[in-house]
Amino acid sequence: MFFAKKKDNNEPIKVPKHIAIIMDGNGRWAKNRGLPRSFGHSAGAKKFKEIARYCNKIGVEYLTVYAFSTENWRRPKEEVDGIMDLLRDYLKDSTNFKDENVKLRFVGDRTGLSDDIVALMEKAERDSDCANGMTAVLAVNYGGRHELLHVMKQLAKDGVKPEDITEDAVNERLYTAAYPDPDLIIRPSGEYRLSNFLTWQSAYSEFWFTPVLWPDFSKKDLDTAIKAYNRRQRRFGGV
Ligand code: IPE
Ligand code: IPE
Ligand code: MG
Image 1: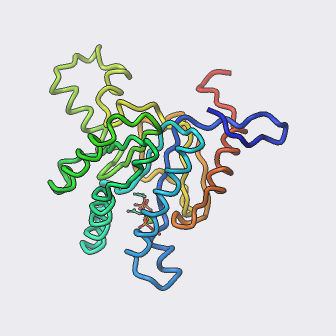
Image 2: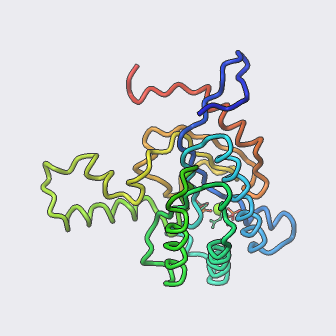
Image 3: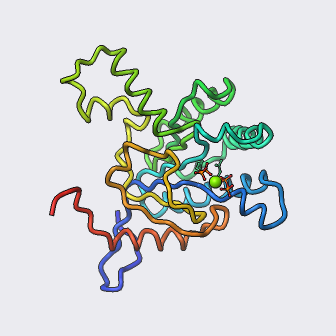
């Protein structure tokens, strides 16, 4: 799928098939405004909808966003509860992407989430089963190391012999088994780290960082990231 916009040399710009975003900087965004952190999380959730719509429009096939990590439970209970409430509200909102034909999916450890949230997630997945537009994957209670431990346990449970432990055997057992690896990983907020996001899957991803805080992230920022991606040469170890 190609962008309508052109590169300087007039070549069409290629949209990455799979974009992943670490939605970071909500707390600092709120703090800068003298607001409680929860306001930043609300603004971040709104931003997700806007950017997801835009990605779908320009032809991104998969958008994976980091919404809550396995380490985020270390935050004060009040903040965690607030984030979970936002997730609940989002999942209950039946207008989510209905007209956009977006397929909603979730990755992460569901056993750590409350039953009603898991039920709402399953419903959102069922309700969007027939959508054939972009797949939006929300990483909730997700951690790359946690996911790899899950894979290792699964391999052991399945009785897979050492010689049969291949990359495919791992890929099949990841939470992300149904999706290709991310082509482009975007991290706003000025941090230069993965924070346990897509540890296995990011082996050959391109990275793009910006100091912009997630609630301020714009469609223009996404365009800039995609343009930067188009200037990268991916070699996957070859020449
Ligand atoms: C990202 O924003 C949202 C979650 C981790 C749930 P933060 O809450 O981490 O915002 P900062 O990094 O403190 O600004
Ligand atoms: C990563 O952000 C997790 C999400 C955006 C959901 P954090 O704010 O948790 O990452 P660190 O703690 O700065 O590495
Ligand atoms: Mg943060």
